[in-house]
Image (cartoon, rainbow, N blue to C red; front, top):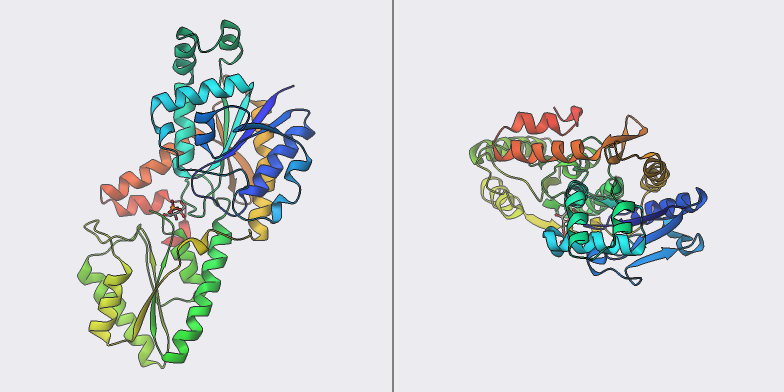
Length: 368
Ligand code: F6P
């Protein structure tokens, strides 16, 4: 009987609870013991039954309809250091966990990949320092790890959608619809900042869904003169045709061609100074992330949970650790290592100012 543990890590995302519920119940259904690691990697570093807990079928009842993550999450600094990962390995082995499924974003899955690659040297050190026995060393030779992607940012390469992204998008669209009504009443312009870290997916899709006048995304930077003229021409054209509202969406990671940030304040200033528009800034913040998941995320998280358990049960020391993705509406397994490397290559391309490459690596063909 195998013991399968699940943890959520990084920023919470709507649908994480559906994913945990699905993993717990699939594990039990397959005759395994189900565990949850509380508080993300922090719980691994702290260890013990308070943080690595066995759970039952009933413990996750009703979780699909709840927002956030009921098992807690954290951005854990200790796990970024080798000593933290060493403690994590020791605690997993002590708890008798055979496989770990991590539901998190780009950073969390990069951490999972590092943990996997370091595992042989971590357990060797644990044995040498007598923190685990010979018997444990032999039994836990291979770290059976799997990633499911939970993040509102939709910034992980090789999967079309991350768990939570469509819920956040829905919330952003609703908020912009509200703003639109007040903008119309006063004939105002609104600059709306949305989350997404270094990824423009939320801003781009929200722009399309709300028919925004202009958007700024990190993957398509322009020089100050370029964007200022371009934006003003478009907004002025819309206004000249009788439009009473102006909505400009700025991704929080938006940058200009020299990689300096473009902030809502910068955009506000241009709309006021060059077009004389009565302009307000709305930073949507964490309302984008909280609340319940839309149906799509609940279904995605549930199906991916089932596949994650199947993947860890199929795994052999030779199979690469999988990431559970969705491609063209099919739930598929991808090598975690490749997904992490490809995601990093997008960030590298942006830093190298190779924006065309960054765009093509995003897998969002319709962006062009
Ligand atoms: O990764 C999810 C996310 O919400 C990003 O969009 C945002 O940049 C970040 O997390 C905010 O982090 P925190 O909740 O730690 O402020």
